[in-house]
Length: 70
View (cartoon, rainbow, N blue to C red):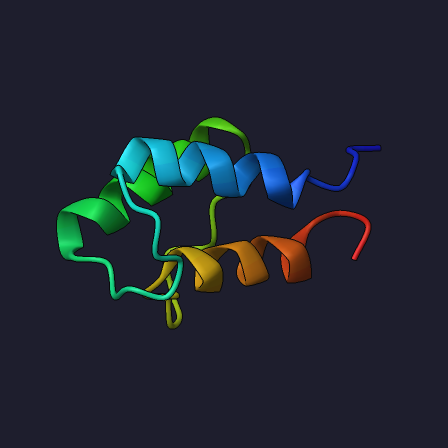
């Protein structure tokens, strides 16, 4: 069984990757690709269909809701 992702660690990683400290700022399309790539490499990526989050906080909430232990 896969453990629940450490949201604090994910937050720090995403902030570093995007060079962003505001978790509520709307991400542009390139930043969204970066987030999707990061999550995909960790087997946390969302399905291709459906509405995607637009902020770091939104992605963290999404991961929390869709993690194996949620």
